[in-house]
Structure formats: C-alpha cells, structure tokens
Figure 1 (tube, rainbow, N blue to C red):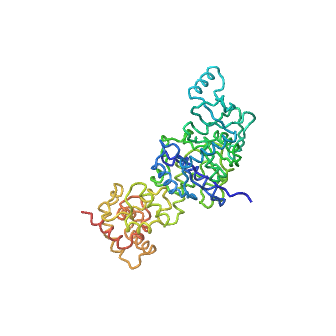
Figure 2 (cartoon, rainbow, N blue to C red):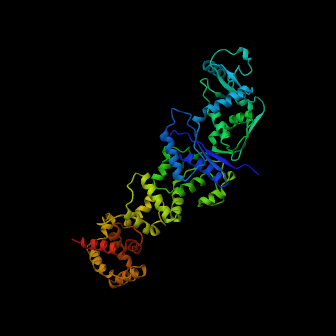
Figure 3 (cartoon, rainbow, N blue to C red):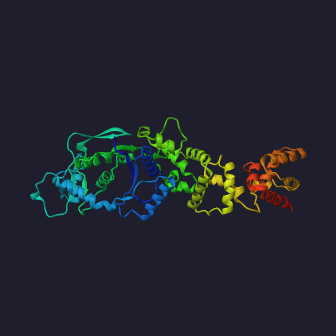
Amino acid sequence: MSAPVVTRFAPSPTGFLHIGGARTALFNWLYARGRGGKFLLRIEDTDRARSTPEATEAILQGMAWLGLDHDGEIVSQFENAPRHAAVAQELLAAGKAYKCFATQEEITAFRDAARAEGKSTLYRSPWRDADQSTHPDAPFVIRIKAPQAGESVIRDQVQGDVTIRNDQLDDMVLLRSDGTPVYMLAVVVDDHDMGVTHVIRGDDHLNNAARQMMIYEAMGWDVPVWAHIPLIHGPDGKKLSKRHGALGAQEYQAMGYPAAGMRNYLARLGWSHGDDEFFTDAQAKEWFNLGGIGKSPARFDLKKLENLSGQHIAQTGDAALQQEIDAYLTAAGQPPLSDAQSTLLARALYCVKERAKTLPELLEKAHFALTSRPIEADEKAAKALDSVSRGILRELTPQLQTDSWCRETLEDILNAFATSKDTKFGKLAGPLRAALAGRAVTPSVFDMMLVLGQEETLARLTDAAQDAG
C-alpha cells in the first residue's frame, strides 16, 4: 500500500497572499484532499527583517476566505533553525560537508578573475578536501560536497525529466559563519520532517530542486515527487504584476468575487480536465491531477473569472450566499446589513442571483429589497415618474388591495389594468420599477412585489403617486 499523500504550502510572510501563491496553495490542497491525504501549512519566516505578523495574518485570512483548510499546526521555519543546523553538523560529521574558511573578499576576487578570463564563476573551495590540521582558527561556513561528475535528473511531473550536469553545481553553503542555516537547507529538512511526499510549487523553484536533491541524497532521505507549475502571466503575456490589477487574494474578496468562483477559476488557470470550465469543489478534488497541469504560463483573464463567478453565485444555496455577502461587506469595509435587510434579501435572492457576476452586482440588483422609504429614484427612473405616470399609479394602487397576494393574481390585476388603459403592461413597468426600486433596471415587477409584500408595495406606490406635487 502506497504512503499517504502529504502536500504543503510554504509562503513567506512578507505581504498579502499573492494570487499566484493562492493558486499554488489550491493545487496542493486539491491534490491532498482528493486522495485522502494531508495538506500542511508552513510559514517560511527565516527572513526576520521582512517577515511580519501582519503579513502572516493576511496570508491566513486569504486562505480562510478561499476555504483552503490545512491539517495540523502551522509550522514556523524560523523556530526549526536548531534542527536545520543539526542536520548540517550531521553531514559535516559524516564527511558529506566541510568547513570552508574562504572570506567573501577571496570569493569575490576569484569570480572577478574568472570573469576576466572568460571562465566559469562557479566557486570551487580549496577547503573541500583540506586536511583538518590545516584549518585556521577563523570563521567558517559549512558547505555540502556536491557531486562533481555525472548528471542529476529532476523527475518532474509537470516539466518532465530535467537533466543538470553536476559540474554546474557548486558546493552550496548549508550553515553561515554565524551558525544560521540557509533557506535551501531549511526547506529540505522541514519537508522531510513534515513527511511531505509531493512538492507542488512555482517553476521559479525548478533550479532549486537539483541543489535540494543533494541534501536529500546526502542524508539518505526519500526525494519527494516534484511538480513545478508555470507562473501566472497577465493578459499581455508578461509576469503578473500590479499593472495588471489586483494581486492579493483578499483584494478579490473585497471586489466581491465569491470564493467558489475564485477556486474554480484558479484551478482552471494552468490546469484542465477535458473541456470542463465550470465545476464544483467535489469535482475538482476528484479530477485534479498533476498530469493535467500545462507547461506554459497561464494568462489571467478577468472576464473568465467574472463568468465563472456568476455561475457559482447562481448555483450557491441561499444561506451560504448570504454568509458570503456578509463576509464581502466586512472585507470591503462596508456596513453590515440590518436584520430587516437580511430578511428581505433572503426573500429576494431567488430573483437576483441568476444574473449577477459579482456580489456588488447582486446587491445592486437587490437594491429594491435593501433600500427603505422614501425611495429615492435615480436619474433614469425619475424620468419614468412624470405626472401622467403618477396619475396611473394613483389609479392602480386601490386595485391592488387584494386578499390574494400571489403572482397569478398580480399578473391578472396589472394586465387587466393595462387593457383598461388601452396599453400594454410594458408601459406600466417603467413607473412601477421607479416607484418600487428607484431604478430603471430591476428584477421583474412581480418578483419585487412578492418579495416586498403587499403592505410595503402599496406604501411605495402611494408615496410615488403622491409626489406629483
């Protein structure tokens, strides 16, 4: 029986959860969840100057919004530094690493000379095979003994086999002269100790894999399955940056995209399952595999995101959608809905969620249910409330004093009224929309009447009719 799958997401807490990082987290989450495995979270906070608690919190909030739950405690890379250093000492004791006393000035001089002669600037330390009796009493780094002949093959599930000549690898520093471990060592030790079986990360780390494999092999540890995914580009084919728009996951929450729509879109960004565009979380977990990841950079397309978001809004259950709306309002720094607004919105969702691509668009369509008397008409709607229209509303209102407030009855009343005026119902719709919502574009008049109820509908129509002055 094969070992359970363990994946991890390991962001550096130096800012928000970048949309590229969010996709990496999602791919790791989907791969683990779809196989009954574990998805772990490690904060790579070894850069103390740039790592902040605020950035860590922003990453956690972004993941929480996207619904990417992790297993176990969050691992802090910085707190594991003693363990990383111990591995370097273990390699030193086993003769697989060595003390290098070369100064920075000596290394720089070597590289300058090599450059001038047109030779490789790859540093070869004279201390690699030096007798310990020649070691000076001076600061040193610990370097790994890289293989010097043959080739290293990164067997990558996305990029295919990537071959690197070993004579292109330097004796990487493991421990700095102040005793602190380097990032490359920390990553390998943490991944091994956390039992990570699959490393799914951006292809900007592909070259790191060959150097990290040296540590795995020197320690006799199993090398994880590699999957280096292409980066995300903007619509212009250049690396995604601020000029393309929002970069942080939480910015998209504040813009009103539903989490399910963002998950679906990010999953499709660089991965495919046949021609499927819209799918649920359950389908994504079942279908996601490393073979479906493309080798080329994916292009971020806001129109596709909007389209998928609209489909997810339409498919989301009303209670879950209201929770998402409440979270969106908080994220966007807007006041929460009152109890009365929440109640009416719950009744209105069935007639507004089918055509909204974002949550702000949904709330605009539901404006009639969220606003209160006196209804303020916008410029277009105000034009529909001329003196003739107000007179019509005055005549119509008493006829709506019916004991049966249902769609069939309302349609009968309004159609009969239109016939009596020798006009079509469409001519009545403009003034009714203006009176009920203060907008020219709204859900159907009948839906609004049913959501608002008889008392509120009649009150709004009476207000509009009386404003004739």
